[in-house]
Amino acid sequence: MPVFASARDLRTHLAAPRRHGQRVALVPTMGNLHAGHYSLVKIAREHADVVVASVFVNPTQFGPGEDFARYPRTPDADAAGLAAAGCDALFMPTVDEMYPGGTGETVRVSVPGLRDVLEGAVRPGHFDGVATVVAKLFNLVQPDAAVFGRKDYQQLLVIRRMTRDLAYPIEIIDAPTLRESNGLAMSSRNQYLDADQRERAAVIHVTLQRMRDAVRRGTENLAAIEARANLDLEDAGFRPDYAVVRRADDLGVPADGDLVPLIALIAARAGSTRLIDNLLLAE
Image (cartoon, rainbow, N blue to C red; front, side, top):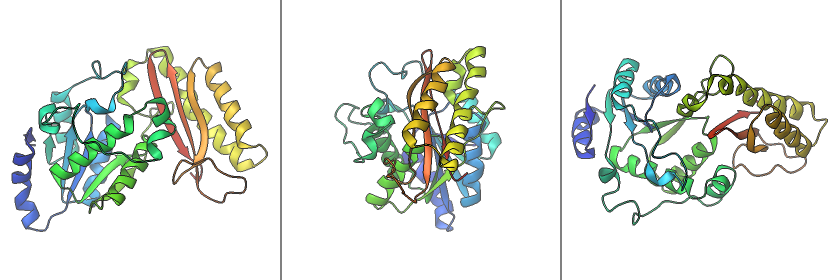
């Protein structure tokens, strides 16, 4: 599997399959890959003839005090894992390739509304960084489709909105969340957890399931369901940033009698490690 640091070289490599009408799918990642990432490659293969993955730890989506410096970087293992998963090419750009004028003065893409709630409220500016880097990747790779995991559900909505509003001719494909045996959503940040924290982190998925079941019963209001979820997380030793039920299409607060798809979302901290997860309530 060829590895490219230059977008120009990658596009040259992709010119031949494009001339033959082959469809290209992109799987954007920040590296330190696990089985959840490799599952995205397999889904991309179902929608395209050529699968390109990118590995880039994007500095503009990390805020002050976040873990950009310590975010694990494992390029050799990532390349080997992607090749084994059937990826056709890897784009591994430098910061200079992605931000030739520097990160401080770069043009930024911002998605109003979605950027400011839940994750956006806890991590101001995060989704501007996400939208900016994904827009750049779309322009540099020029895929026909791109695959994103549902674990980062708000990110998925941000990218869908950006793709629609900027008229990118790209199909956005969402992929289900892969889980550890105890229900913990697979994440590169799970490696920061010690054995006890990893075991206790099963409470996140269990709490989401309880929220789903309570909503389906319809015997409690959403405020009570959310309050109990926060208490359950605290009782398990986590510090929740939020445990909420929202409209699945725009993350708005549901009104009484709303007949729309709902989603439960949790963000909680174990020590210095922050975990997020969600569950569509129709599942």
